[in-house]
Every structure is written in structure tokens, then in C-alpha cells.
Length: 147
Image (cartoon, rainbow, N blue to C red; front, side, top):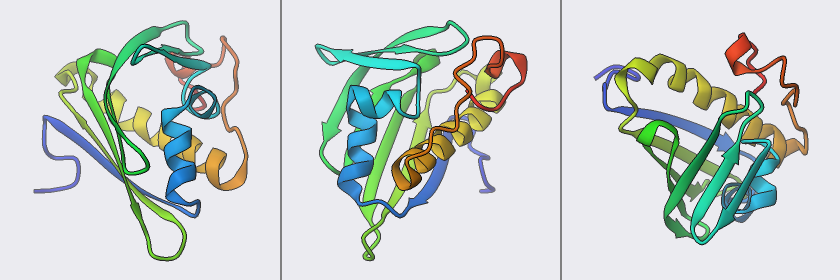
């Protein structure tokens, strides 16, 4: 099967120079998620309230959180986003994101959206840089990649 050819699954892999615990913290904490994923992403009683720059909000139930190896959340559009973290043997982390159940009409946009999120994650944890614009007029819906 070719790259991104499964109509029911989106899968991306990313290597990060940062240790697995640091990557997990970025995914699994309010401050971590706000540093790369959404304007805010506060968890209360196992539900993360995501607020995005374009005004869209989403409440995602945490399905599984196994520090520092796995973080799984019911995500936007009803999909299941699973982040698996493996040590690379050199102090870094190999991340595999598997997003299952993405609605077919949203698939192409979601494939691209995950690239944006994952590059933001890498910039934040490996370099301490926030690549996002934080501008409600310049967001994903307006064709800007910096969500």
C-alpha cells in the first residue's frame, strides 16, 4: 500500500531530538498543548477543550494516557488520534501519529493539518520556538499554514 493510501487511517512519523518524557509532556499537559497545538487546550475530568485561532473549539475525550509512551484522544471530526512515542536509542524520540476515522470529506485537509501540528510540536520541544501566528485573521481557514 502506498503512502497515505488507506482511506480510513492517516499516519505520520516524526523524529524529535528531545527525550520521550519531554515530548509526552507537550502532548499530555495543558501548557504543553498550548505551546504548539491550539491557542488553549485545557483538560478537565479527562476531556480536553481545544480552542483554535479560527474560533473553532473541540472537546476531545482522552482515551488513553500511558506516560511516557502513548497518548490517545478522541479528536476533531470524531476521529481517534493516537500518539506513540519510542526512544530512538540516542536520547531522542520517534513519534508515530495514527489518526483513525477521519471523515472522508475532511481527509486531505486533515493530512495537511497534521503536518502543521507535528512541525509545530518539533519546533516547540526541540527548539523552544512557537511557529504559530496567533492571528485570528491569518489562520488555517484563510489559507495560512501557521495555525
